[in-house]
Amino acid sequence: MSDLEHENEHTADGPMRCGFVAVIGSPNAGKSTLTNALVGEKVTIVTHKVQTTRFAVRGVAIAGPTQIVLVDTPGVFAPRSRLDKAMVNAAWNGADDADAIVHVIDAGARVRLEQGEAKSGDRRMVEDDERVIEGLKTAGKQAILALNKIDLISRDYLLKLSQELFELGCYSDVFMISAKRGYGTDQLKSDLAERMPTGVWHYPEDQVADLPSRILAAEITREKVYLRLHEELPYASMVETEEWKRLRDGSIRVSQTIIIERDSQKPIVIGKGGSALKAIGEASRLELEEVMGCKVHLFLNVKVDPKWMNRRSHYTNVGLDFDA
Image (tube, helix red, strand yellow):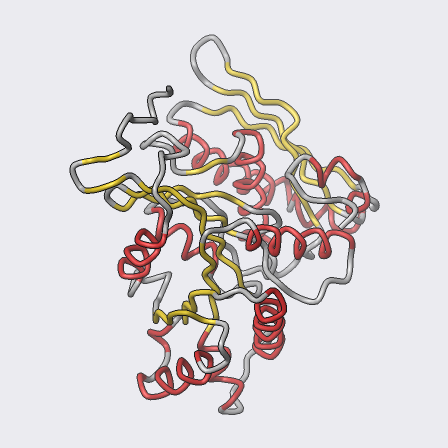
């Protein structure tokens, strides 16, 4: 019996519980922000780019005697490329295997669209929400609706919207939240804890994420690339950790390659005199040191690979289905 297992599976606060919660929704609805808020630490990257999360990332939240394994899934949208199809497939797979599903909807997008004040991407986001709703209905699944970004909307409209969505018949409950500000997330967390089945915890108490260090490091650097270059660099880029070595002094040597599709993108990533690449590396190194708790030596390289999106290894390395 492991150190996570107890003979009676009870604590002073009640029976031990552990289960999986899939966090689904359209790209940029706030799924990763909500996952981080529920865990209490950053476990998945957040940027202004749509479709930032490319594969299911597991964050581990604790609520009394309950361990909630949150599966932050890629957004559900109309897929076009092979990568798109693999990402949408990963999202629905996460929902299929979960004990509970949370559907995050950006309430602000619906308000703006209805009032004729739509921003870029609002219409697509609402269309993607409808895609999720149809998927839930087809699968005969009930989800918990999390109306996000409520701090930007009037209460009257929120009540109207929540009623309209609840009447669609695919939601068991509705929570009004602001994942970014933390409004309503404690109540949602408590509700999720009560839904988890009894059983031993899957992870040690101090573990907040289930992601190999090499992949976590690549995700952190990819976030910095997007945050630094989100206006200039297209969505089609990735980061690969090629070396991860613990040195004798306890520090870690990390070598990574930023992979882009075209030669014309290389000067953008490198920047004048190497300024952009240096800034990306510095930001990534600082966060890696915070996460790993030791000194990190980070070396970045930039490579052009027009066909990276069609290479099987780039999918299997992060658990995506190349043939989806």
